[in-house]
Image 1: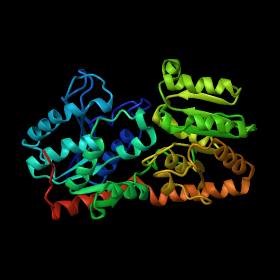
Image 2: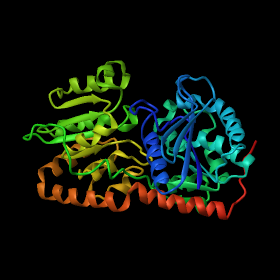
Image 3: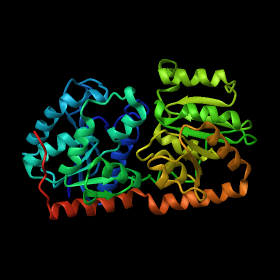
Image 4: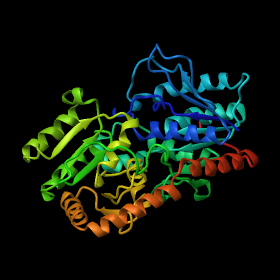
Length: 404
């Protein structure tokens, strides 16, 4: 099939680690690659944020990234992009009137959904949508600090009823969307995947002190990822070290407000000899760090899916995480890791300490985590399941409806 993927703010070519560059970028890049490997022709449409970017960038056979001129050719926060989605949509409508017309549109994030549903209606192409994050959940956790555009929740509700199918990544997201008013019949659960060729238990590992347990925590340096709770929890794990990977490169960490706050917290608790901020690590180097760790600690306050626990599990590393969002699907408590309540450093530290002290249980988790990642979360499986969804919406097209 000819598949148009829209990812308005999250380019698959972006360098990861910034505030708006993380799991969605990886998801789109890996999914496009897996779909191309299955024989599909994929074009990924993302906003041009640099005048030096080429209009079209072939990535690999079957995958092309198209930079759409919508708004200024400069970096912008994703929450500021809504006014440019009409221009994005008009450009897509014109582009799909030429030689290459998609058979299905897969929009990633709600603003991509706005651009995709309008262009899809004009060209008679079915549209599926993956939210990646929901405004209702963000508002619940961030309150007045939520910078989402006004009306986001209403747009998300309308899109869920207008698109041909919503691709849901976890059971928790099913619950959230049905509460939002999206019909259950429109939801198809297809979880994200992990690159099993890149992430595996064998291969080189980053050097470490063999006499000191190593914990790893990975993600964008934003408050909701819970790194401050990880640091607090380390006070209850006195013999271990913790490496925090994410944010800008190491030499620029002191320019990042959240990195500075975390560094101050580390110093305040006297943990500088055991807790370190490493900054951004190239994605191809991440398996080395996972393999060097005894545990991955993932402590988000909320998490639509969460790729890093899967990457760790694929490397044979158990997970201690918070029982939120997608982690409640990927991590099986008592089998592949342990889950604790969010925003509870004492519970997190206790779970880490108990698992580090129980070598037999930890080694059992290693085997189960690796098996779960391999059998349930390959990108090939994700691409195959999505291919079935794409084919079904193409065969039985339900009219898309969207308000003015």
